[in-house]
Image (cartoon, rainbow, N blue to C red; front, top):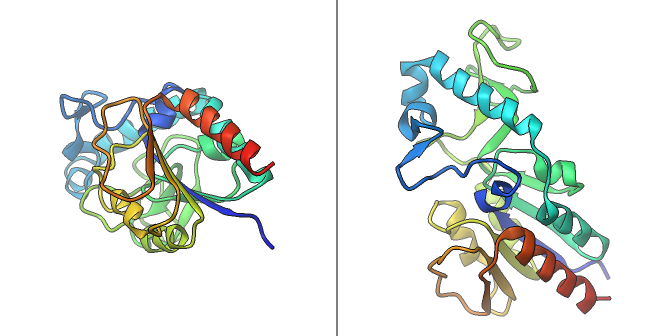
Length: 231
């Protein structure tokens, strides 16, 4: 008999404690930029240099950040569970903490991809500049799913959630679709937890418990419970 399966949906709240600014602030800006200007295909075609500079700054910032206690706690779950993390975050903090099965719904900041072939993706830790091209001769862009673009891994994530024994949501408002809809793929009897310090409007789904704490506190608490419960 294999390990019980846990699917975990993570959002900006888990990385905020590592110093990565959350995507949506109350003023509708991200690092003083309008979302439409730096996170949409229209913004890209309008001003490629602005978009590249924006993500180059985010990439440099990420390389200075470290995983926090919540990231490490989730990695520790793999000792006794079959864990898949579905993240809306574009950082690599889950990987650096030791988690091994991660689905990046919204892309990855440390990768670049071809504008001619979306399947041509490169590991990329330096700046992307105008003139940096893929093997087919087209300009490279951030490997990020922008507003208005399809989320190619959402069906893969939905299948994982359908088969999970436990579902955990961490640091996301459950307002950004299609990721927010994943909780609806869980089974009726599947235990579910939502960890977020904000006054999140919890969806009306059965067997959902809310832990109103920041990620480093709530996640470490829940992980200790789950490891002890099966230990």
